[in-house]
Length: 479
Ligand code: ADP
Image (cartoon, rainbow, N blue to C red; front, top):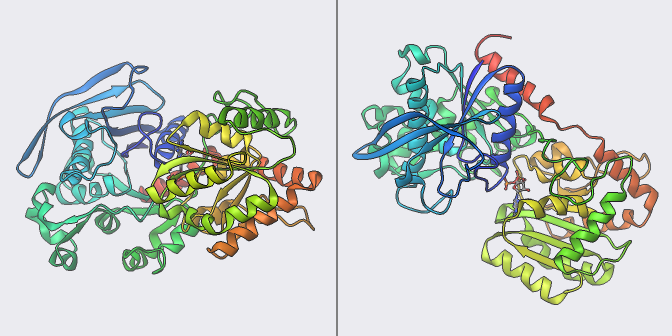
């Protein structure tokens, strides 16, 4: 199959979260399975392409968005799979991947039109156009509006993957002319248009040939009012075609045996290195290292979704009573950053908050921590619990979305289960999860069992990419 994969972020060129990891790994694994996959993303000013030999494939491209004109180019980087960058400094030299600027809609409309131009100018006739999140969600509609008779796209089918329904790209309808779709405005959702809104993700849901979310449970949850963020009626309307495919893990990047970011490799058979990584982590962060004291880790965007506000009510008491250590890496909302700074001041020998984004530290926390905490309110898939399982770092999670699909509650009677999973999203739930994990940790043999159960799990892309192939094949009637 020929696949064009369009995303706003791709590891290692730009990353704020899981979308970037998926956009790197899924195309790579599809490519290895024999498909011709091209990835397109914007070339941000902070993107480091120094290790790529960039070749210009579209030297002159004028992107027209309503009355706006942008000079652009498309570069190709020799990587696995082939990566294409839409170079348009007027839109992407902002010092950040996402902005609150007035032209945010145009920044990503340009990506959709850039995707069409890439196909046209290089003669690439995709079987599948795979759009990710709101940033590329108008692409299926653009294909339907302008290209159904275009031989290049004659057999093209579109897939929209929802990585997070909360980010919808909802703009005032004043932007309609910029979409170039004003002439076919009947294609827009009329009630929304009358209400003065244009919602990119909604139109992806309406026009993509297939829609999937990044875990089966999240695919179900978003069809209900609690997690549907206003789009649940539209998802229900096409519920027979909304599927959930759990993300995989790029085990080349995330395996304790060969992780280039950690000083001491280790494996399920020999966990010696894990303890040494814990020591390195504590020492590196200025925490005392004491063997036998459990260490709980968090690596996260600090946003409401992640449910970390619940920790305010439970952590101080738990830290005092149980004496464990707690390391947090992340940045985001000021209230949450302040919460972790306060905890660090109150428990300087137990808590370290590293405010920022650090790939190496994220890996070291996965390797060095004993437990990994994810009390997310909702979690489309979640990657860190999958990484944690492989690193023998026992996940403590709220049973929602992809967390419910990947972490099974440990049962000491049977010895089955890979982590601790609480049902109720409240302070009592988190407390229960943490206390259960800390209690189990005290019994070394039982703990070892949970750790090994987790490390034996296989969430590889080799497995998960086959589900995307099935989806693509179904769309092309090539079962
Ligand atoms: P989301 O996409 O909602 O942020 P995921 O769990 O799907 O959540 O993916 C998060 C990814 O981003 C993981 O690879 C995680 O390690 C990474 N990440 C999040 N915050 C940071 C940070 N501060 N430093 C380094 N990596 C981070």
